[in-house]
Length: 165
Picture 1 (tube, helix red, strand yellow):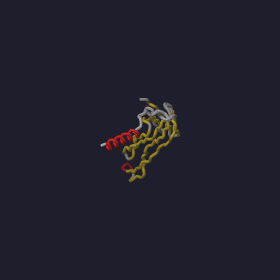
Picture 2 (tube, helix red, strand yellow):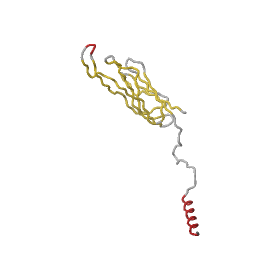
Picture 3 (cartoon, helix red, strand yellow):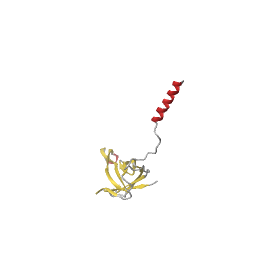
Picture 4 (cartoon, one colour):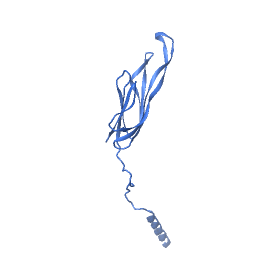
């Protein structure tokens, strides 16, 4: 019985020596405390030749986002309305409370006739779709628009707003 008590006491001492006191951990010097998550409203505006300005908005948190949708306007081929898709995806990363790094792709599909069968009003056409767009990475100042592309087809501008919850 005495041996059993000694073994139990030795086990208790071994466990007590291995345990560490509970202390509050403080971050190492030079590290920032954890920040509250925020939302970002990303608005893209563009103009098309002979068209009205268009825009889209995506609300996201820091990280990846993706939008696949159809544009309202269609292309008419053989008296059929062919939809045009719109794709917007990317990543946003906060640099500080005033600036962020935005990487994005904005593109769409454009249908085009590849061949025709027959002639006259009853002719049929075959079509394919080509993907066109812009991919870019740049620094944004929250609340200030930036033009990311400009040519004879129009401009594409982006504005990112940081939304505190």
